[in-house]
Amino acid sequence: MRKIFATLALLTMTVAATAQQNVLNAARKTNDYFMQKYDDPTVPTNVGRIRTSNLWTRAVYYEGLMALNEIDPQQRYIDYTTRWADHHQWTARYGVKATNADDQCCQQTYIELHKLTGRGSLEKTRENLLLQMATGRNDYWTWIDAIQMAMPVYIKMYSETRDKRFLDYAMQSYTWSRDTCGGGLFNTAEGLWWRDKDYVPPYKEKDGQNCYWSRGNGWVYAALVRCMQVMPKKDKNYKRLKQDFILMSEALLKCQREDGFWNVSLVSPVTYGGPEMTGTGLFLYGMSWGIRNGVLKAKQYRPACDRAWQALESCLHDDGFLGYNQGTGKEPSTGQPVTFNSVPDFEDYGTGCYLLGAAEYYKLITKK
Image (cartoon, rainbow, N blue to C red):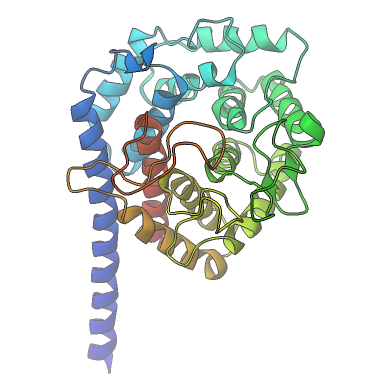
């Protein structure tokens, strides 16, 4: 009997180790594809027009790369990221006066990289945030993507400095977007977010269902994680974000597809259904973190994570290119049709979403 139990335990360990390695291999493959294709991180992007490489799409990629480095530490990841940050002088896109959340997103990685390596300076990030706070306005985040782009910058700066002004401003701005903008962008009754002030009720799909954009909700979901993971758990603001995170998790669990993806239009299987990679990657990121940190019950959410990873695996081409990546936009209809072979206008943010999901899922399946 002991031999049987020992054999079963060994088989279980082997299966788990294989699963872990498969996740890591997939993450490495798509990241290697990206780093080879964009081997010079200082070169501007050129999609329709020239844009500096610290725009939001590239900034999200670096969020994913830093997450990959946590499970697969490699100096080349750090060197690549540092070269990018140095080139942009550790400053928001368009400088310290930037107030657009998209232009501030890059500063999330600056903060993480500085903490990890001691390289660079956060003075320009601090100056940027203080200048925006000095305007006395907390109504900048009129679209939900902005919550992911900017809110973690403020919370991470608070975590680094313990200057409560950053935390207070972030929470005031989040609350305005949640409860006031367009009548309130968070539909607490359904646990999902309207995309922006132009998409609040009665905005519906052709089948009569409410229009909740997958990646837009994914941005908020990821932002909640990226803020909570550096906040004291006893802080009242942590508890506020945790409550919204749980509401979203319950809603997202209900609308996951059988194949593990989420529809581009979350509750409308008829209008722009899935599969779609970026939203799925962000939801896997959030759910895996929630389970690991005792916020979500593993028995309830682990099967959803396993299905989501199977879905993400199916997006990966042999060369590391990612399929089912919806292009930039603000609603389910953008960039359609989204297919395994369709090429998005930008592919950097999609790689970031994939890496975030893969890295957090890897941690989940390695948890003892």
